[in-house]
Image 1 (cartoon, one colour):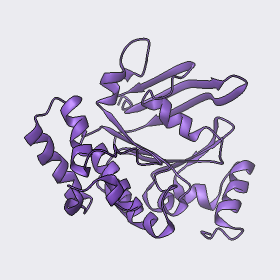
Image 2 (cartoon, one colour):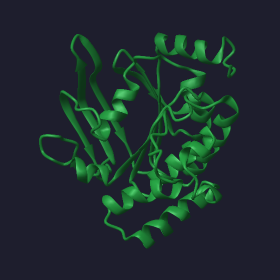
Image 3 (cartoon, one colour):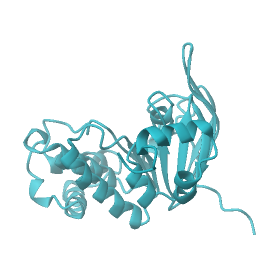
Length: 253
């Protein structure tokens, strides 16, 4: 039986910022329905990785293919790619002059060509899914950080993506708001959404990930299912990272 083609495939992906190598020949496959957590120290290349996947950052070498389409500025494929992938950022990136509902309808109307009524109906489905339908008519400044991030996730879901990318989605939140966003992400994971999540939230990785990928100096140095990644990491750099994050006894700190 032929091996299934992954939804996302990276081969030899390299990105340089002058003398700094942010990505150094990265190979990675993500299957449809798989949840992959990418972790590593600051500057390891993990955010650059997801930004290259949706074309926010132009990679210098190698190939990225999403749903059979090469991610390429030169080939002009970014509109096709961005119709299939959605990204949730650290800083929410909501338009401050638009309500939560308007933020969620903008993409479906402009990219997918939905009419206003259909876009609003779709947006409300996802605001209800994220348990914030009562916030639909409020502006971002009227919402808490956790509510703003849930609106950002609803906005991404309204694009009905094949792949969801998360770039440190809880790093800008107060500690009491982190749990509510992680719970939403867990719900998405359990519903079968294909996800690549850059995060330091190791509890989420343990509970939701099919695979944990550890990056160091622009390279993937280890990847494994969470039970093996946390119990028996093979790489010395991975062991040091986990000791720093989890503590010497492997307990979340």
